[in-house]
Every structure is written in structure tokens, then in C-alpha cells.
Length: 256
Ligand code: 3PY
Ligand code: MG
Image (cartoon, helix red, strand yellow):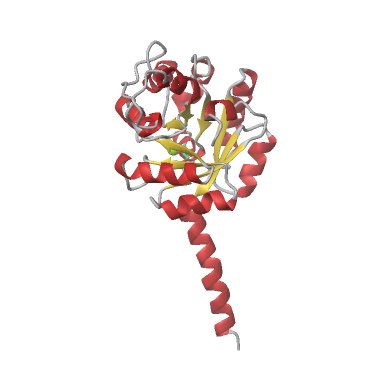
């Protein structure tokens, strides 16, 4: 059984995670076996919807991997559905203001803490229909909002004050576009803004998560106190691993 993600995010030990856009139960299980703490099931960039997310959540939990769902956008119905299928937490893209962060949090918490649509016959509630589950879900589910645009960075201090928000997640890919250096996630302009927000999050006692395209970048952010690092995307890792294998064999075959 996994501890609630909300609690786990308060631990000093960082969570090591990875994005998954492949929609495969087997890939999710392999991530657990490889040693990741969590998987981010990516409904923003993965070519699949909430219908496919349930089995992936079950696969992750069965292997002791936290399933976090990145919803397509900051939409109350999408956030509620992601939690109903059993996600340990939601990641909400492109949050640009405290009001947007508040809306995301509200969509993830049942009354009186928020406005999440209530049904306790869903997987997240063990299909049991009991009244006690709502308060428990409020205390266990993690809400992390992504800061990945100019406005978001500028509003970071206010976003970080949102009650009941568990953390912010810095997205260098979108931020690099917003700052005029598209795709250059290591550009000093991008890194400096991310470092500022990360320091602010730490000061306010909120988890700061980050996307790191490479292991080196992940190590750097961990060194700066990131509480969660998502290292790359499953497609990229599989391509790199298969390319190394095929390339190695070809070298051997074509050697004189
Ligand atoms: C970003 O860096 O923009 C992300 O959304 C990470 O996947
Ligand atoms: Mg992004």
C-alpha cells in the first residue's frame, strides 16, 4: 500500500518520476521495476484519454508506483475524473495565476474544502459508496500545478500561497518557448527563472517539482532542493535504449 502522495511530498527524500505517453500497462510496470517512485500519466501530450488511464493506474499501484495524472488542461471535470479513476495526485498544466491555482485545488477537493463532484462508487473509493471516504480523499490526494509561462512565473509568489496546494511543477520546455528561447531548457534565462521559483517554493514549505530532460539536469535540480524530478519521457528513453542496442549490433556486423 502506498502512503498518501500528499504526505510523501512532505518527505525530505525527493520523488523520482518519469512521464508516460505510451499508454501501456507493461511500460508502467517496467518503470516501477526500474526503480522510479512515481509515473506521470500524461493526458496532455499522450495520445489517450481518461478511458485508458484506469488500467495504467491499477498497474502502477500494483507495483508500488504512485500514479499521477497530468490532465489535459485546468478543467474541473477532467481533474475530478482523473482522481475518480484512482490517481494519487493530479498535475495541472499552464497555471498562470493564483485564481487558476485555486480553481485546480477546488476541483480536487470535496466540500467543504472544494467543489469536486462527489461519487463514492468509483475506483478511488474502493467502489464502496461509503460516506467517510470524502474527507479521507481530501487529506490524501495531491494537487500540483505547473508553472511554465511568463505569467505563471510572475505570479509564482501568489500561486504558492494557495491554501491546500501541495506543490508547483516547473516546466522548462514551455517556459523556454515563453521566454523566447524555444526548446533550450538549459538556457540561463530559463534556468534562472526556475531557480527563483524553486527557492520561493522551498521558503514557503511547498514541494517544488521539475521536468528534467536529462539525468544531468535532474541531478542539478535535485542539488537545488527539488522535491520531485520527472526525468524524461518513456518514448525518448525507449528510443535511446533501442538505438544503443541496434547501433551496437550494427557496429559488430559491419566491422571488417
Ligand atoms: C514542460 O517542460 O513544459 C513540461 O510540460 C514538462 O513535460
Ligand atoms: Mg509543458
